Amino acid sequence: MPHTPRITTCLASAILATTPVLATAGPSHAATTGTPLTPIIQTTTRDTFACGQGPGGLKMTMQSNREMSQACAKAGEVANAYAAAPQQAGEEQAVSVNVDGANWACVHKTEMDEAYVECSHADETLSLSEFRSMT
Image 1 (cartoon, rainbow, N blue to C red):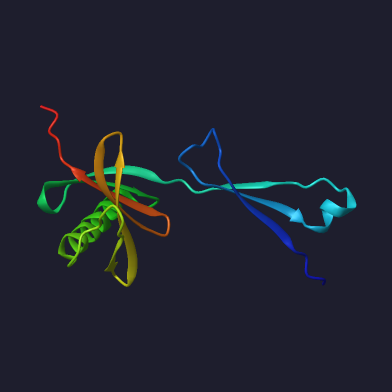
Image 2: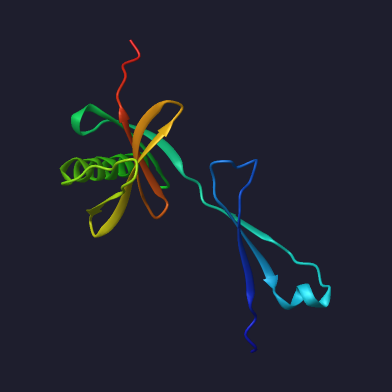
């Protein structure tokens, strides 16, 4: 059986703005033979969870495809590892923390005049920001 190359492209979708979309087309020789490509769309759903307060009262928000209890437990582990790191992330400097053998890259960000730290690994993202009571 001959090896058939495949074309893989990452697309951003307006309909699924927060969901990565992977489009996989048929054999690449189809483009040169005039045969139409048939895309196959696969999506990975990430939910956003408000995981309460972490170290120092920081608000933990986790984007993950895990169940909420698992995602928030991991958020707490990453937040604790970040808080214990010898250096904190700055505007120009990322900090790497290791949780269960996985390196999470933490960077300082500012969005709409709100500063926060974002730690990411693979398809998960933890945001640590100042907790503000709604009362």
